[in-house]
Length: 275
Figure 1 (cartoon, one colour):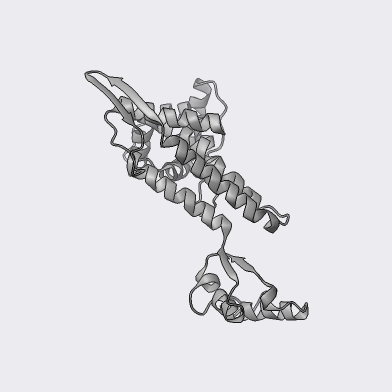
Figure 2: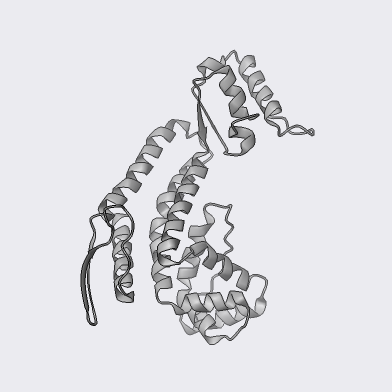
């Protein structure tokens, strides 16, 4: 439908004209179109001078739906920002740092291979996470977990001054890092599995409505269960009984490191049982 060459091939006007020509050629009036699902770029869905604005002039009742894959990705990203605010951990930062630290360095890879042999595990190539590739984060996190002990030993035994190395040393020296990674490994399939369904080559438009409703129900059910989780932690000199989530759906302050660890492990265990 869309032109493949010319200086104006990517403008809203030209793309809309091609869509209109295709509908007219097949004797399909715009009033028979109920929805338009396109990528969220301004040329497609912008309020002015976009494909959507032109279609709405033809048929004001048509429903403009953004890209479902983008919506899922943005949902996961917003949830990750909330996790970062509470726990101070960003899985994308860690995977990017690990990927670039070993990228193109035969010496570093060889050194890591020695630690893999020491821990009795197989060396696996470190994967690069690319933020615009929605499905890469889960694979990269899983690869890090597959070699977590060798990686931790590698960074703890080295002495480099680069800022990236210092960040990685701090991360792999923190016992909570592995817990955070396991949590994300258990959580991300909820998003990536749905995204894979929408990106398959077979037609999936007839599945979209029911699958999105199912996806939303799945997310809401987890929030409902978590809102009732209670955490009783006994630390040296401290006894507390607190709900993990308060009535305003914001996380209660962590009282100590042991409480922090217990709560995250509780969430992780629940997620593993649910999936």
